[in-house]
Every structure is written in structure tokens, then in C-alpha cells.
Length: 248
Image (tube, rainbow, N blue to C red; front, top):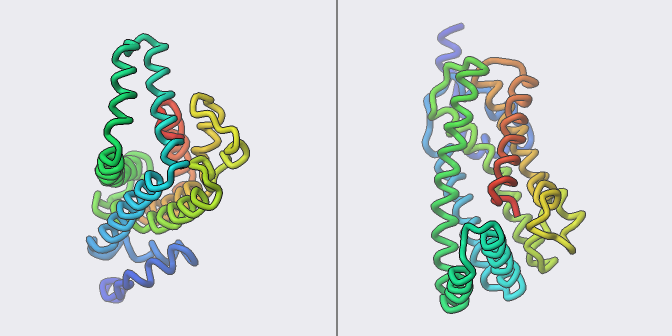
């Protein structure tokens, strides 16, 4: 039996991608007892980064979407002035600087998006590893959680593509595959309820379930335990994103 387990064939990346969408349990079934492979997480990470940069380019190439993005920045500046953390003079200079930078804003935004997505990717895998180790008592190392998060990012990448198409088709940054669709025509980034609705994304929920299945396989625990833990982490992330203004 041990020899058969050792000879268990390693699934190709193509098979893993297909199974993530059609049969997640099969996608993660062999991960626990196979050597970690960089391609399993590096490729989806790069695709996610490219799509994020592409979305930023589309946003700043469309005047309506660009104005919505800049308006959100202006509101953030106004809130800082109102809270006393920024003077009106500094706010005026910041607003003037945004207008004068022109095309440089897009370059800065794209570079920032790429850096942030890379940091988020590794940080998310780290959180999953810690949660798996402390809560599910999983013996799996950090590299295996990079694989789990990487495979789940194929769902996230599909979500990004849908988000880009919706934003362009509906001419609004707030037209996303989320509960925020209910208020996208009157979306207010200063409204906490609107930010919460926008953060509850269909593809985010789907990806959370996939992550939960992966965590359960790595720890040899029930699927319910894995998904339950992933759901708690997802809710915590939504709360942080809304509180810090990451959710638009």
C-alpha cells in the first residue's frame, strides 16, 4: 500500500486547473503527498498580476472609469481633511498634483497594483498556513499552502475577467459580480453598507470554498471544517477591507 501511494502519479497543471472548476476535491487530493511544485502557484500568481495590471490600464484608458477612480481619491482626501489628519492646503496640493500627473497616474497605479497583488498573494498563503497549522493541525508546509491558494486563484482570475467586462459594459467601476450590484448606480464609497455589499463578491465566495476544500485535504480533516475555517478568514478579510477602505 505504501509503495502504491509513493507511486501515485502527479497530476498535470492542466488537470489541476480543470479539476479546480469541475471537481475541487480531486484537484487537491494528491497535493498532500506529492512534492511542492512552483508552477502550481507561480503561473496563477503571474496571471492574476497581469489581469490586475490590465484592469488598471482599462480603468485609466476609459474617461468615465478614470473619473470615478479619481473621484474616490478626492473623497478620501476630503475625509482626511474632515477628520483633521490633513490640512486643506495639503488637500488642495494633493488634488492639484493628481491633475498635473496625467498619464503618470496610470503608470504609478499599475506598478502599485502589481506590488500589492504580489504581497497579498504571499501574505494570504501565510495566513492559510498559520490557520491550517494552528486550527486544523496540518503538517503541511508553507509551499503546499502556496499551491492551494495558487489553484484557488484560477477562480479569482475568472472573477477579474468578469469584473473587467462588467465595468466596461456598464461603464462603472462599481458594476462588479457582488452584492454591490444592488446599489452600483448610486454607489457611495463613504457608505459602509455599500462597501460591505461590494466586498461580498460571488467569485470571492467561490474561491473561499475552494480554499476550504484545499485546507481540508492538506490537514486530512472534513470538508466542512476546512470550508468553515476559510469562511471565517474570508469574513475577517472583508471586515478589514471595509474598515481600511480597500473595498470600493
